[in-house]
Image 1 (cartoon, one colour):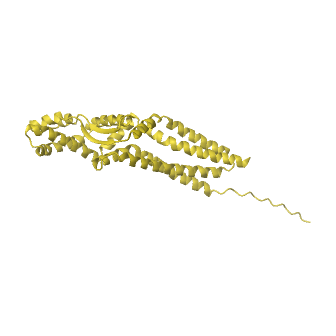
Image 2 (spheres, helix red, strand yellow):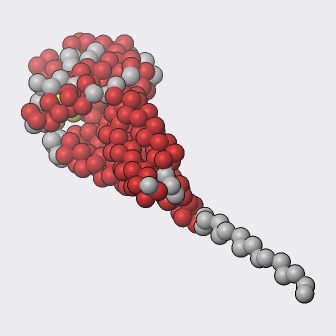
Length: 284
């Protein structure tokens, strides 16, 4: 009976680990997909130099090409407009435009039928024109006429697109799975004949789950970045991935560290030895 309870408790530890492994990514996706979190991540990504450089380069190229037909040499136009564009991109006012662009890209990512994801900036020309100062009229006109500026784009397979959409649809199961994992772990402790061993097992399970999550996240990152062109676009995709999904890696590492601490601490606690009672010897 005692050994049967212990085996059942050990099985429950495995069940709790499987539930946590599935629920943690879903819960992270649920939290990062919220409107406020998406906006905060967008602002953080905008502070990355590689992202700002890509926006400035794309806008400057668009402006230089637009005014070439007006008679002003493109190189001269770029030299005059690039400092203004860089100042606009670095301004707080630009964040509103950027957040809107990130929301549009997020909708593309979650579209299971869309294979090409493009991050573009709208209305950059209008914002730059307001700060144009005393630039030549052709440059000002070109600034106002700048349309969408592509920052980065990448291609994904049809299977990756469908998988992303399906996983996103399951995001609400994250908290449910975590609650179930905690309940199963508690039940394992209650049923265990040797609770110290079960605590060691729970710590070891947390370590394994944490390491598995790190490996899965890094593998998914490699596959996702493989669709981006080498150079700036891949750097931008990496910055976006690390900002949005890098938190899952941190959670996984913390879980693994806690698991080690719990397992080692429980293993160090040796069960108390029963006190031997000696019978008093009566004097003869």
